Amino acid sequence: MLTLREQQQSLRRILTGTPVTEASAQTDPWLNEVMHSPGLAMTREIASWWLRFQVESQCIYTSRLMKHMGCYATYIDDHFSRNPTPPAIEELSRHFLTSLAAHPDRLLRSVAAFELECLVPSATRQNPALILWDRDPNHVLTALTQGTELPKSDRCARYILTIGPPSDSPRHVSCTSVCHR
Amino acid sequence: MAGTVESTPHRVPTPALATTYEGMDSDLFQQVLPLVDYLEIAPDSISRTSNGHAGALRPELLDQIASATPHTGLIVHGIGLSIGTADGWNSSYIRLLDEFFSRFTPRWHSEHLGYTTVDGENLDTMLSLPRTEEMLDLLCERIRILQERYKVPFLVEHIIHLLPDAPAEYTPAAFLNALTSRTGCGLILDAYNLECDAHNFGFDIPSFLDELNLHPVREMHLAGGFEHHGFQLDIHSRPTADSTIALAHRILARCPNLEVVTWELLKEAAPALGASITCAELTRIRAEIANIPAELASC
Ligand SMILES: [Fe+2]
Ligand SMILES: [Fe+2]
Image 1 (tube, protein in one colour):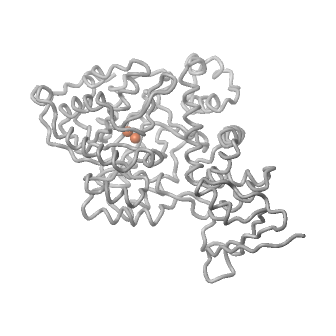
Image 2: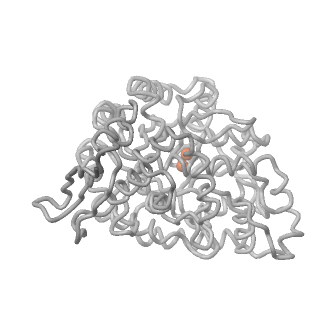
Image 3: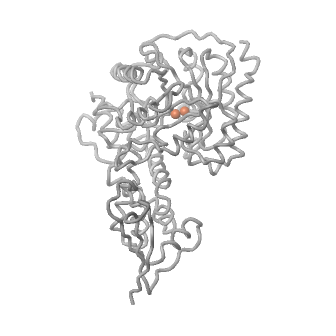
């Protein structure tokens, strides 16, 4: 007989596709029924929708870019199946954006880094954040907002987006281009 | 096991109308406000990350809510308390509630009979609770803490089931009857959730309503969702179906203390539905809840 806590822990493992290891859970008739129920796939699918909705609402530019690249849903499913979802939904976006720091796509790294920096409360920012872009970030963000074509990588220049102090406004955002030829 | 509770039908006064508030576009907000008596606030949905920690309500949304309060009442409906988690509820949700109550006094607050976290990990969904004596004890203790802490009525809402029920010692109605009688908490009856359960696994709504003590029912939820892979889902994205309205009439006719009917709509679904359909739906529900068919009202 499983305790309430064991019951809930086993159900969590089943939902996340993690093997249920305890012998008592492996032989529990109700957990076996759950594992073979049509509602299990539906429950997992709803969890995935929920995650995508949450991330989309908080990481607008990054999720739009990833949808444009055709990798959003699979990335979310893969990322959160390998990493525990933070208990507070508000932490989801930070977790998700941080994970993209090593993504092979340079533009995606820049957009994610930008949104991650935007989550930092202005009053707590000590130093400016510098984000390197391979194309004009103003044009990128406009295209993602309006759903228009993204600019191509600029072969002649790099752009440095600066967020935060030193400036009059702690939320100050500025952009400078650097010719690299 | 609790027995059947007699529920004599009553002619009830017209309940107030509420709708979900999870932050709202200001145009929609201005259009919706004159149509409702209450906003049903989901604290989880109006919170933001603060300094790396959840637990702060968004000040601009609190201001928007405050702008409504001279004329519109507030009720609170949580999502993330995870009241049934064996190893403890979600204390960051309690911090959100504390913050909300420091600024507003809602008519009541409520939570789902379910759990969303295990060992501090989010399940990304809400699972139903086993209807056992052990769970009942756990819930009663936690409900008493909430009642003591916030000094306004606390209501619980039944959720839909997609997975087979865990072994139970109570019927669904008997479990709710035990919970309400032991704690004095109120109930939210969600007409659409009941329909989902009936569709998904043949839940017997008439028997449930016959067995349930309907006196603690203070609020009813209405919503519209959709079917996916054969499951009727509680993803509140559409106007209310006629069948849900018909069930709502039957519930209204039998619940003598039902004060508020809330039409639930997900924030994510609001743009697709549009302001005109949203407002038309609120107007329609207002008319429907004021007009219980005579054969139900008089029986
Ligand atoms: Fe609810
Ligand atoms: Fe509901």
